[in-house]
Length: 208
Image (cartoon, rainbow, N blue to C red):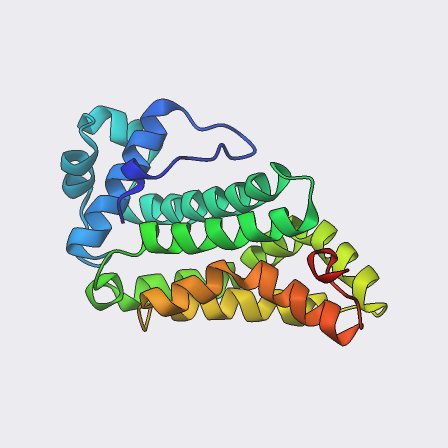
């Protein structure tokens, strides 16, 4: 997992540059060696910090692994909310969330990452699933309000959000091909079109 190529979203309590550097290095080391084989020396080598700096912030490997899980989760939660907040139009918000989620999953899941350390990553997905659902739900709240108005009935937001999160996580096990990625990226427009059709609403571009 190479966090160095991914923009970092600031957590609620900003981390120091040294801690961010350590955690980004730890993520690279986990991707290369796996969580079970990871050592503090690996973290030092991958992050480029001194032993004293590492032990100033983390007492042992488990401490590092716990911080890595929180770091990745907070980056996702902040990032998906920020992606939505950049747009006022509800469908543009939907599109931005879908594009961010797809890109984030690909950036954080290089080839064979689950093969290197399946237990660590699966435990992360299980323990952070609810938090990720909440973040996506928050990001899409205004979009759901808009879609509820179109179809004149409240959507089951929890089911929709959980479906989106489960579908995107599935690409970590069975990688998505370009066709699926295209369908995912077009979901905002497709879902809106389906709802408008069910509601008997003629899209503006089809009005004569």
